[in-house]
Length: 223
Image (cartoon, rainbow, N blue to C red; front, side, top):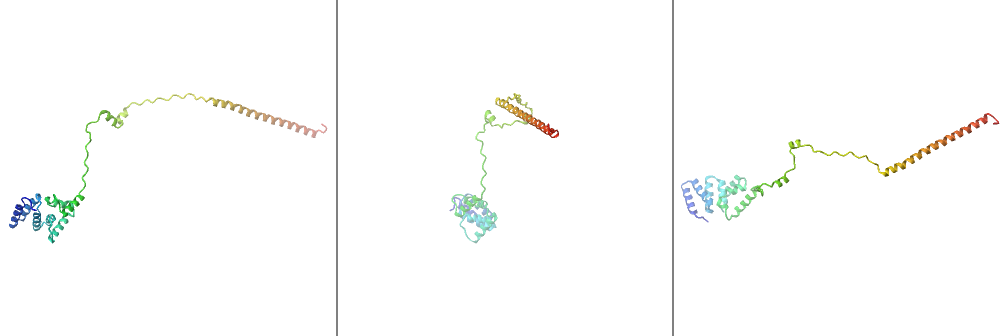
């Protein structure tokens, strides 16, 4: 399908080719296919670029058409090699009018690969919901509770109440009663020891007297 004005562009391009002005014919067709989707103009543009020696450019123009053949394959291969199979760059070299509207299967596949290879857009920073300043009370509530070093250094010391002297601890009455009960036990224990000591002393004296009498009877018979 030839768009409006296509016949005139193709005629002018052929006239330029007939006079050997290949560059002029290329420029006429490039301007035309930028705005108008013209399959015949795509093919002619590929041929002119190939004659000039621009194989990658010819491959980009022919890729938008159904053209086939060894020359077309060679140009398409040169086009892919130039861009190192960078599908986004390859897609950008297709004539602008061929990238709009309904796409051929080849162009649709190339577009899908170009979009898949394109980097994802960076997330935009969302504006703050309310740029108005917060109320003073809210600002004070949200402000971090920090004391500036210079204010902390000059702040008066906080008076710490002194602890009251502890009152003398009075032992509970139960302890006093227990202590009182323990005294007789101690005294009774001490007295028992003295009694035992006196008893032993008395026994010692008795034994000594008995022994002395026995010795005197041995020494003085008849006493």
